[in-house]
Length: 85
Image 1 (cartoon, rainbow, N blue to C red):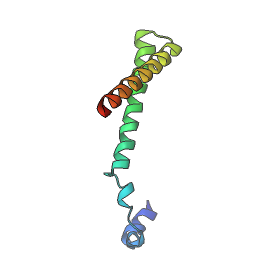
Image 2 (cartoon, rainbow, N blue to C red):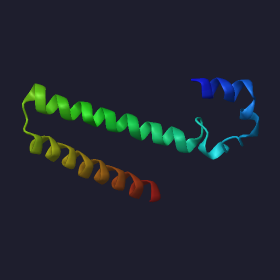
Image 3 (cartoon, one colour):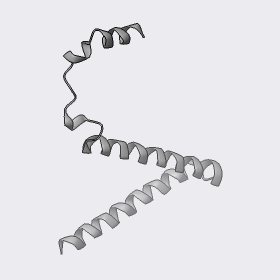
């Protein structure tokens, strides 16, 4: 705590170079990272729901997510091919 107070009171923060806009909190890169983290938390929540509430075994939950991944890849591939035509 005292180091932080000294950092502010001695104005040592002025000598630190600001973060580039590429790594800023509102940049596209950081927004994408946030969206991926939120997606992983949603998947974790769904996995917990499937295994605890529904009673599907863990391997069954993994199978559901594997099939969902394959299906979403199929749909995205079909959409991308349809947009090229």
